[in-house]
Image (cartoon, rainbow, N blue to C red; front, side, top):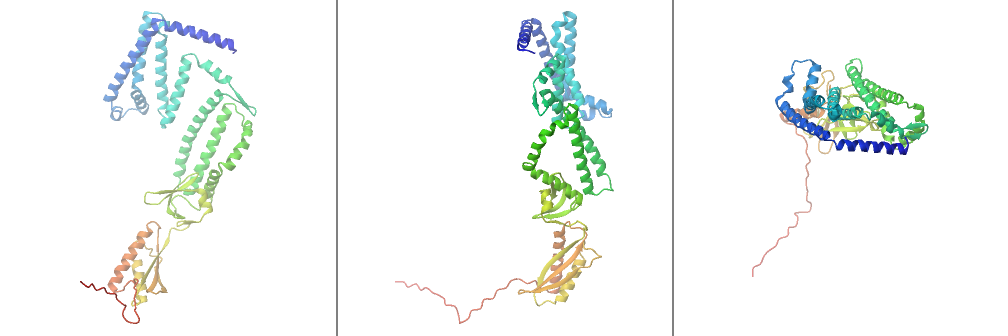
Length: 436
């Protein structure tokens, strides 16, 4: 389209708009539209105040409940559309059809919005619902106004050529829509597969997480490839961007890629898995989730540590439940030299054996470790079946040990300092006040 043709079309449109503005029928239609909008808003307020959706559609079929929910949620539009249709019928019966064209457009737009809301009501994401609804309604509006074809031609007329790839606004819009739809369907399929995998009792938690991540990644790559092919983009034409992407990964995304690869390694070698009790540096807790970039470690006090996967590969990690959940608990204590060390060991073993969580198949052991300056030092060890609450078990055993020592008259040493003064008494300065 040349410059003169564009100018002529603009002049034609200006003359058409001028003729419409000067027509009294335009203002009559606008008045009817505003009146119908006011009545629709009042009716919608009454409907919403008197309708309880929890009990109104109870027992109805699911499709009918969905339809009623959409109508109540879009009550202003649902009331506005029939009123405009009624006004247009009256106008058609009393005057020329061209004098009620604006009413026809308003009714078609209202019905299009209702239909779009009905179809998007199955989507759970509110942001996605708004995006799809507004986009579909804009396409419907352009089609109703007869401007869809010219708009498509205008969007396709502007282009940028990069490495043999012709990029236009129309191509980018199509690609964006297809990517959104493809990724949405991919997410639904991934969630379905994840639910099936997590229900399988034959797979370990680490294998389940690994399969879910690999399936999600494969489906995402497949969805992007299908969307690119659907809009006519040859994947080989994107080779020009591979070098830039490689440089970006090498510099800007190095840590992200390292954490992603480290996460796959952790899942493959099963060194850690969801449910394990781990200690990483100063952070201890149970692994609650393994993500693409990090693992979540629940500390048990409401905190969760988000630790990058790379740290688990490169740093020292203590896994309390790697091969065996049985945990050795060590309690260090001391007594004074007046106590019988054999009796002390026997009391400590009896106390540990009587603990609720102590394993009966692995008897406790107590040894004398040191003759220290303040007293004798002992080490009591016993096994429990699970490392959870190990500090509580230690506290319980130490309290019972304290009670046993009290019964037997055994004392726990504490620091005593003696000060000896040689050479007589210390000089004491005195001050005598003489009154004058």
